[in-house]
Length: 101
Image 1 (tube, rainbow, N blue to C red):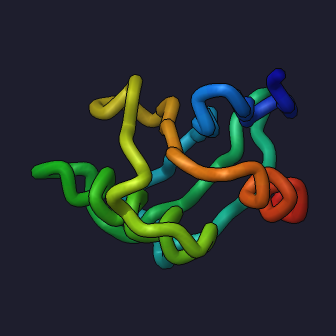
Image 2 (cartoon, helix red, strand yellow):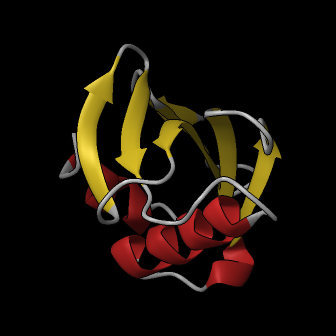
């Protein structure tokens, strides 16, 4: 069974959440900006060099969602702004995601 929105999809069999994100590096602060098409736009304060923006994104998602960073992995788009991020989690995180929309 899957539960999904325009920017996230939850696979209950695999207990994996896939997030489609549009990441803007080099911003003033880390924050969720809102929906941009079928992706959640997130501003990241780190520059897009030496994987700093990706590391900061993973830290920010971990803090925002209340999960360990080891549960988060960038599946696609590590070198671009459009990313697909996988999160290993239980169904309780889906409820928390719905508050971000």
